[in-house]
Amino acid sequence: MDSNEQIAFNIIANSGSAKSLYMEVLNKCEVEEFDSIDDMFKEAEEYLIVAHKTHTELIQKEARGEETKFSLLLMHAEDQLMQTETMKVIAQKFYKLYKKGL
Image (cartoon, rainbow, N blue to C red; front, side, top):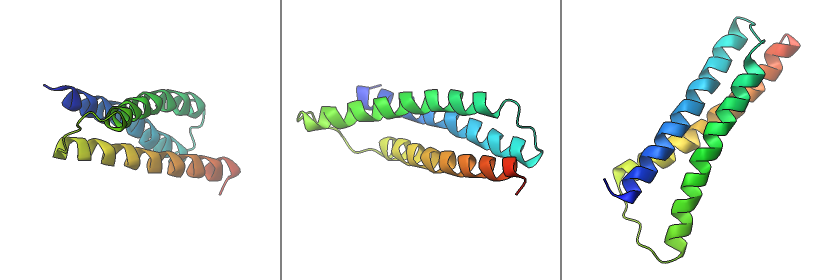
């Protein structure tokens, strides 16, 4: 496995972990179980930070003139990262709405 594949898998794994936590936040909001949600947001953010740092390393590598081969795997990794960012915003908004009692 080359370094670009390792980078892609790192982004996918960390984004996926964060996205799963954001989905769980939505599920807990639906049943009004708010106790652990703040901790879930913190944990998800830790995963997302790792994914973003890894992504930034890839961008910096290319900016230094090192070749970055396009691959479906890398495109999937970036797609997962952006989906997770969207899920984060949705989870935060729903949490605020549910806490207010809609």
